[in-house]
Image (cartoon, rainbow, N blue to C red; front, top):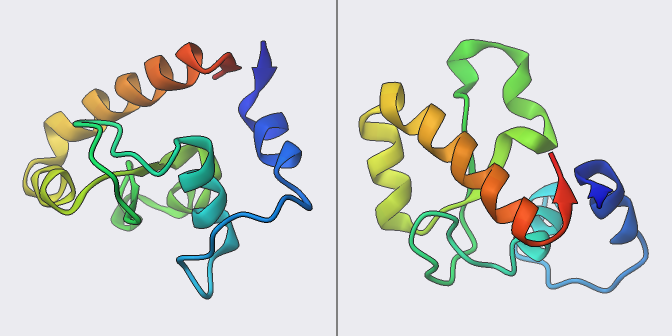
Length: 102
C-alpha cells in the first residue's frame, strides 16, 4: 500500500484536468478521488478543508482536503462538530479502498 504523499508524487508530470487555476494541489486531490464527492459519490470540482481555516495552519495540508459536491459542502459547513470526524473517517476509508495508506 502506498502513502497519500506518494500518491500525490505519482501525479507529478501527469496531465490532469485543471479546475483550480491557482491551486494545483486541489486538482491533484480531485484526481486521486476520481473527481467524486467522498460523501455521496457525485461528480464535483469543489475541494473542502476538513478542519477549517479558523482552527489554524493545518487546513493547508493536503491530507486535510477532500472533494465534496456543493450540497455536501454546505452540510459540512453547517455542522463542523460532526462533519470533521465523519469526513476524516470517510476519507480514510475511500483512500484505503484505493490502496493508499493514510
